[in-house]
Image 1 (cartoon, one colour):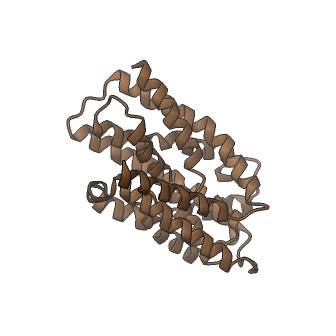
Image 2 (cartoon, rainbow, N blue to C red; image 1 turned 120 degrees about the vertical axis):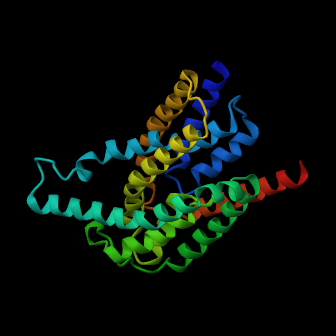
Image 3 (cartoon, one colour; image 1 turned 180 degrees about the vertical axis):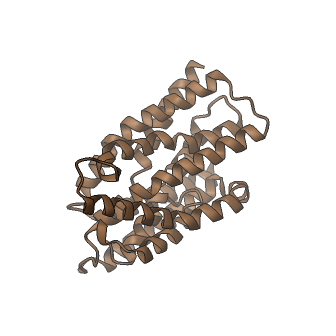
Length: 275
């Protein structure tokens, strides 16, 4: 139990860092599992790697509570209207991944929830970030105000989010790339990706818990504590990382994250081939 708690803390730290940086949280958790094995069932770990993200997403809810709250008494009528519009756009963007996820979640896990897939996706999307940032180097973004992010743009980002169902892609990475491609500024793309994660992660976590229980797995108290510890650690780490990322992108682009993905992917493939 104590050993698993320490490992849950490590995984919580990794989740809190990688959920918001465009480098794939699920991918890093799968890779970490290659080196830090928890003495728990494969079904529990599959559920843990998703549900732990609830801790991370709660950091967005806390940091952006006022901005996301359409009932705030300090908001004007126009501000409340803009908040409702934002939520509607978020829900529009959730539809594609929600539908595909419900239909093909088991098939995706069975075929792609592995070491080599994660490594390849790290490299592929790392290259994509570098190419897109190079292409946009001297281009001014078309959308620099989240309130002006259209429903059409939200739908396009939603289809990009479908790509993140493959482990190693990165939900934030895919949605940020999609938003930047259609003209959003890095800041708008990043914030919309944050907000899009709220219903997505709650939905994915609920689905994983239900599937875990339907398989007849007992959800014992020790496992609940391990899951809770991982989520709490992910929450506090996420607070720090979200603030860091928003400050970082005010002056920098995502090229460094692209190179990180490529280098890590190459190292992991080398490890897989020669170990």
